[in-house]
Length: 181
Figure (tube, rainbow, N blue to C red):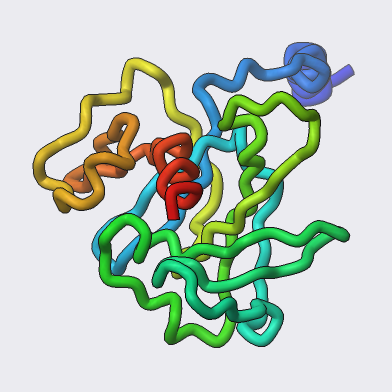
């Protein structure tokens, strides 16, 4: 055997066990979404059922509802409310102007104390879903004052990312606000 073959073989023997190791992924998963052009937020994946791209005509408008309620939608044989998340949070929302909505569907039954076992869902329309990131608990901070005041009651914690502060949204407070209206 030549030296090249020996070194290749030893390298293969070294790397082969790594192929079957399961890597330790650190941090909790969060769905990153755009709330306004300047503000991105994080939603815990623990409560996310799915994300959808929905044409506007699939959302059924409901009269006499709060201004942040966009309507009803059917997905996977379930009917649930769709809310304009930035508007609910007191931010300027581009959602009503969009032809297609990006929507985060959350399980509200796991957020609220319920006596029945029925799953309930809520659609959170956002301008853009940006993917999943992992957050290590040591990276979380208390809510910062540099975020809009209307957003503060709906923030659980924040995450510093360069010069940006990403609010980790408190879904319990969001669901309670929807239930009040």
